[in-house]
Length: 387
Image 1 (cartoon, helix red, strand yellow):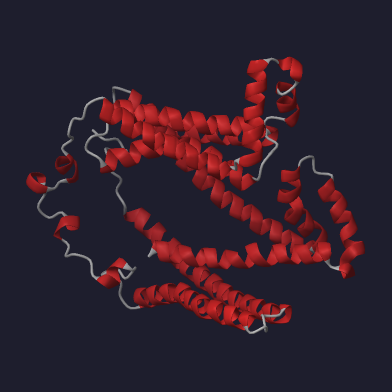
Image 2 (image 1 turned 120 degrees about the horizontal axis):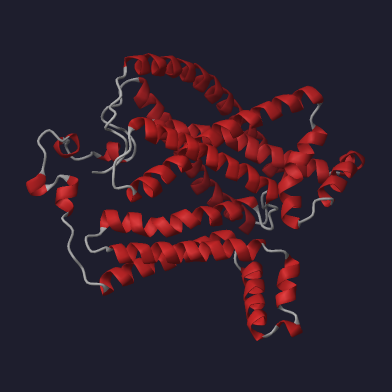
């Protein structure tokens, strides 16, 4: 159910991610706003890199376009969204550091108090690093591309080891380490190559720099011109998987007893809910959990109907527009504008309903959570370690 509700949050965000950029584009390009947009164009042109000019266009435009009171509300909403996002990231990355880096190297288990203090210190360390890095870093590429590439330092490096460890019986420690090292190395090189100053690359390509630096500079220039952060991430993931499989198979396979890990076959545990459940029906496979009752089923129906309606609209509308074009009566700009006008109102009404729904439901669940936490007795031995 949580995943179904999360989908409605993104549909609400569509109103922001689509309408605000369209309003900014109209403000910058429409002749009626040419005089008012002149200071904004100067602010955008003052950004030091093309990537920053693109990334800062909408934030700078909001500062110019919105009146004082409304601008304050937008800033407050953005600040709240940033805090809710950052606190989850801080806890997530600190937990990964403690559980997957520190604890595996310790031979003796930590006390609950010591592990909690370590987690708090890790959260503080991640926060300090993020603050200092964001003060220093000046993006040379789009933020989304940098985020994809930097995230792949972990995903490409650890993805092959995690997936291979869960779904193969022949994976080895050497294969996991080789896949991690290759994936992380390629992503780190990608981050460096795409973010070093262009003056450095020009210096490496200078005739008097030498053959080695010329080759390195030429490679860097080619990567910067032809590969995005997403492509570099994909290459790193593929290379990591290839090394994981090759090294694991070359080192000789030792079949792991997966049934024992998953409590299957001879190791089956009586009363295991996952094993005792009947096979999923068609409705359960598309999102209708057998535990859904009443309102939950209604939410599931609405959630599945929304994308199905737009898919049907696409399947019907696309052939109709192609047929109209073949008849010499292609869809006009006015008709497109009318369609997007209706679409905007549909999203606005749906977003308003979702906002009211989530506020009421969120407050109800918040008080339920506090009630459950007061009655909850924590188990100190459940510290996330595998023993």
